[in-house]
Length: 112
Image 1: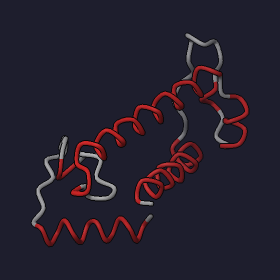
Image 2 (image 1 turned 180 degrees about the vertical axis):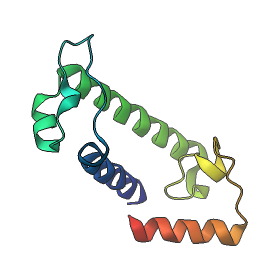
Image 3 (image 1 turned 135 degrees about the horizontal axis):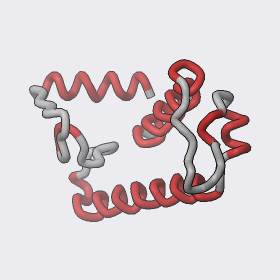
Image 4 (image 1 turned 60 degrees about the vertical axis):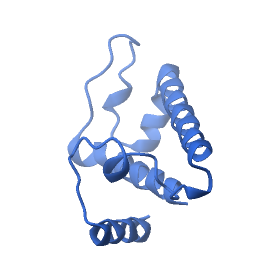
């Protein structure tokens, strides 16, 4: 459920972001300015097909990567660990003690 909680958090931000901060400029490649709608429902109705394809391909990639990690680590796998941050790719230089890391995990579960 940690993974689904993370997705829900990102969806909530994506739902609110355009109304608060505005949208990205249009896309000349597709000829459709699908990014000018601040109402999320209206934006979904006007999104071009390639946008849905991009979202679907990204979701498939993430799921395959997650399944690969599960197969590699087996029963020693930490639920929700997709090798970002403290336990993998770390672009922000996160470095927590064991106690701080556990507290961050608890916070994430509470927020999800």
